[in-house]
Length: 263
Length: 253
Image (cartoon, rainbow over all chains, first blue to last red; front, side, top):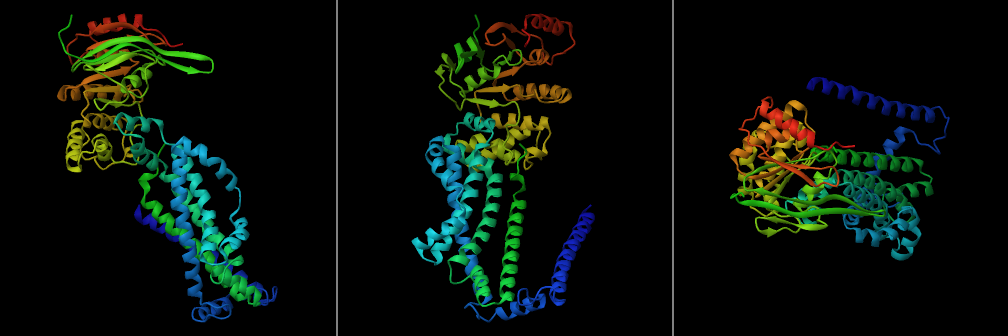
């Protein structure tokens, strides 16, 4: 049984690996045969070379690759954590206490459809192009899904379970913590996963318009310096880190398996 | 007429739900008493307002009129003296058996060691030792109801309400759970208010049966069942009573 599962996973891994190799092969073929000029699309080997070089060389845009990654991660994590903490709390309160819902929902419904990128111009005017500005934009990206999922999740709390808690003498606040919050964990987690994805993608948009370091900034500068290898390298790093983050989050979610409810 | 101590008294309890079209009476002028340590069964046809009646006693619903007394104390809202076992899906799915059973004492702020000991006692009583760390979705329907019963007992209520607790179980499990609840009731004496729509179940379990009418529920008749336990569902006395009650019971439309 266990061995079978292991073999199955290995086969799966092999298939994934094959797709990646095929992707790189097609890419190399297109460039090597001159179908696309290396002026617009660098060869895979060139990107690898730039990668190694960029590890220690801050040229052309001013920071090493490590510094750019660190800068982006810092901004994204601060924005994301703020969004998660504030968004989940607001969503839970909105879903649990009708007065809070009546008070907050109209404003929230107007803010909700505004895409995070649309916040960029006003953010630049308010905060300039520094750390605070980027955090602010990412915050709005992650905040919305956290609120919506926590709100929906806690509203789905089983009425019977609330009654059970009431018969044991639990007051509203205790029921909120002992029944409402655990009931919504699954939905909250789904929201956090969306928020993490949005934060990371919004980060790049924010950095491309308002920044002086980071991966998005590096890509933008790559275009200005006519260095397609820098652009592609930046894109690949962003994609890789994004995938890694989602894997980490999925692992954490798997650990909390029994929270997944059978309603 | 009876010298036994009275545990629960309902005096002319009515409950009406209001909507745009006016009031819908669910229960009307229900009065009865439950004696200390008695096993009282409330029998009524489906959808007659039995659950509303129980929720009113448990304090989950406010009566429109009438009074409810536990001993001599009038009840307003939920009360730690009253425990409830629900129909189904009432266990916390994210809590283990142990965590479910210790929920009541935990809400009352009992220290962990003490409440674990109490919970363990009742987990053993309902026969779920070695399942302390299982989650509800790993248990069968009968086992889940055992957890529900243990959870209610662990809070040490004076009155235990069971709302069609075996309604969702298959026939075989249902019979064994009926034996179980009698065994548990005998070893840990409590006053029990048990609701069912099943005549055999009512006759097998009850010291007395309060028969309710169709909605709005009113008390139609009270039967004293003095058959010796364990009861034989095929004995002539049992069948005679069954026929008598059956003839008097309303049919759900």
